[in-house]
Image 1 (tube, rainbow, N blue to C red):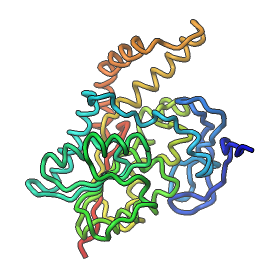
Image 2: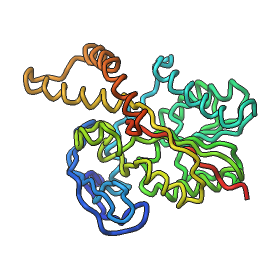
Image 3: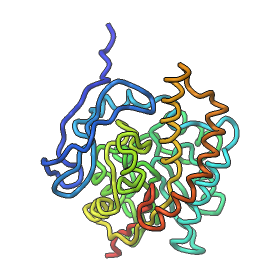
Image 4: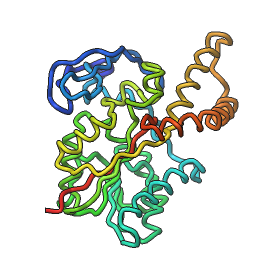
Length: 313
């Protein structure tokens, strides 16, 4: 006898931020990345303004929507793109306390490339990651202390870290405020949280709607903008320090690539070959960069980076 697949199981929830029950439906999304069946209403809370899926897959069902390579494990070397992202994050973390040796926790650390670079710079590091292959790679290749699990399942020391980073992780969490409270307890008084999320208040989110790549239904359960991100960190006990808009060109590029793939399927009966796909995506990246940079400059960037501090007392 085999277990019945939970794919398709859904639950109706109150707002994950304010617990309100009154929301307007914006549109209905589908799984454009993997193509698994289902429709996922995207709603906006009338109380606090948070955008989220409702109803959404149950926790048991969510695992069925993640392909094995959702968090890819590098094949022997890191890509220039991955190194650039990790170095940029490390630069931002070190700017918090220039010259200091920091204790850093990266929640949702993937293979741990950022943590490896931080350790090489003399910082004390620890990671949390739910993906089996990524955890094994980080432990075996980099020798990193990575806990296999989630913020909710891992035992973290209270007041144990100077900095906690969460890079495009919070939007995946069923209860983001609860997760942020766990982070707040784990930080030392005066410690800093830095996280990045797609910006639902961005120009590209408004332009593309249900086709926006960063919507990533149903894996992205909540969608923040600067105001709801600020509310979330304050609800978890943080003091919000600043929110920085980033161009987030990937969201724009892969939204357009998704549209081009759809055209290819209709006209040719097949998807764009991998080699051509990456070449086209690279060209699009150069073309859209000025537009994405301009939108970030004027407060409508494709992603936001949130800096929040645990009160010193």
